[in-house]
Length: 301
Image 1 (cartoon, helix red, strand yellow):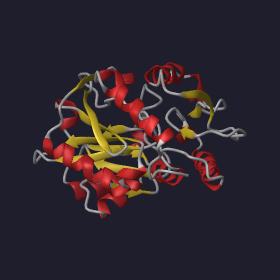
Image 2 (cartoon, one colour):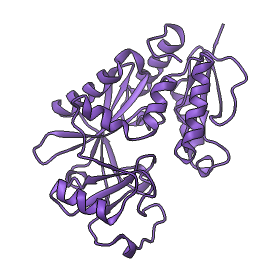
Image 3 (tube, helix red, strand yellow):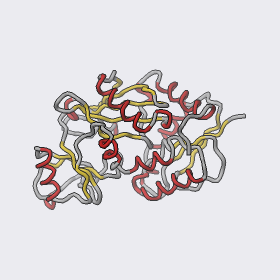
Image 4 (tube, helix red, strand yellow):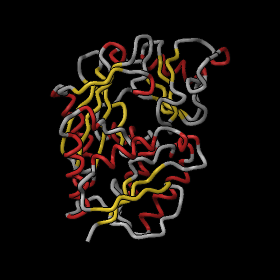
């Protein structure tokens, strides 16, 4: 008897539902072709009324637009003992980038970060003193796709102007970090794991004059063999969560001035897994999902 697999998609009440997610969903369906399972999809914001052998939040775009509702939906799935991979408690923890503090406390090297309740001129001055440089990155603690993320080397924030509505200072809980020059010169490394094992890596270099490494901003993406130290950092992140508790993960990092690496983000909700950049990535993804469907692993709701 075929298994039943549910992939969560964006909330129809938010802008992400009008984006390119259907193409992403189609790509996952294509990667999973031949799997002995029926594949369904529905918005994460709607109650789940049927039984499924496995639920993937892989296309739950826009969760950052209603984070409390999203965490509530994950909590409800966990309470109902639904098999959600990655597990609801891990997904909920990953919503707020304050999780970086937990990783740093565990000895994992992150980009130096000042967590603030609100970005103010006083907090910017404090960050500049702490980090010893003027150029800072301002970003919300809950966000996606570089929304409200920008480099700031100006003076008073009330003099800020921008032509891009996405590139305005964050409002509410935020992070202030030193700008890492390697983002522009080398790029951001993304290391992808399936069931706790390294699959492939992609190096994402922003276009000239930009710092955003997403394909949406015309960054240059290509598959690369990661440096050993980058792989060790990524593996430490996976080990912190527990290799048997993760179906998929993307570890984003940047090279520091000392040639080491700093974690930028640990993406465990709906990351782009860059399946098309490695010839065998789709097969490894399919094998991971098949294992979760038929064998199971430590990740459960």
